[in-house]
Length: 432
Image (cartoon, rainbow, N blue to C red; front, side, top):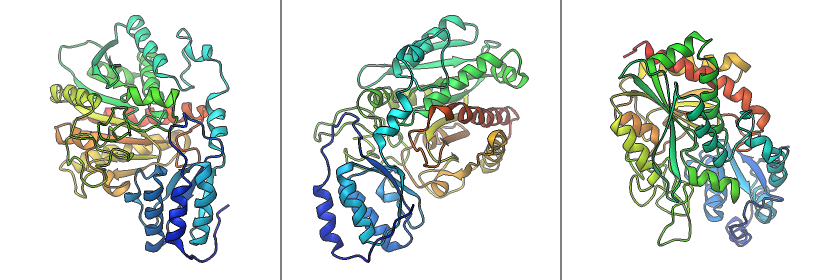
């Protein structure tokens, strides 16, 4: 139920009280009593109050990614630690700002998501379960397994190593029917906590291998194209989200001047780097890094894409959550040169997706559909000559947020497959 409080009084003083209530970081994923709340500012006054409060408190914004993006009418989801909620929620009521509690106890929600199956059930490669979330070790084991058992269609290789020394594995998927073929790049897990992304990358590979013989569309795709699939882009961050902090977003690189770890791997690309929608502060979730491609993960993928830019005709990156299909530009309000082709592909893709379960996706340029952000992989890919560049924001719209239940992996991936196949077949029609 939405809550509304009394008229505001002494708000700046109370805001300082809130800051003192913040818990120490480094709680190793213990979220007992933490809440996720939704606020939709209804005026410029409410917008300014929320920006100020969230900036001072350094709360974990789930949507949008930074207080800077909060504007009148924007859905804003925020994780509130237990200690902070005792002060923040009365503060919002006092300011007469309406809010809704989406998740009342985050620890219970996490346990409900991941605590019901045995480790053995997750690990079995002979009957790999695509309807559960998998750790990095399990995903990489699965990749090695497919490389051995499906060598006619799958080739695994590494584009480099992460900050913490982990290999950055990619699967090359396709029939070796001719020496040169156009290609599609797909990456998932650029933000560590968005687990549905890597789940989709695995699902895509499964569907390709299982339906290649029986589905004419899939056979056409794998015969005429190669797919480069990177199930986990941000390997260090994803591993950390399993072992330490379920809601970790960034990479895990160390900063020499600040105690905060990591860079936003989707603000670290050399396209309007660290301009609007990115932060110079190392402790912010949208920290752009000390310089473009400072993160070895970003540098390795950028190098690979640059090397193969004449071959790669589509770049698809999978995120969560919002139910959107976005295309360039993200860093500015402007129309891309091949707008009609990209717009047509997006329109058909979201209609195909909706045909499965009726789930509606918004689509359009990222800057106007979501918000302006600089240094993104999608804009970089487009500016480097890849004509079709898309970012998917998968399910849901906030009821579960980053804790999308495993029961929704199958429907989410099933509908997303329809969209990806649609975009791929559109690519083969040679729209210019």
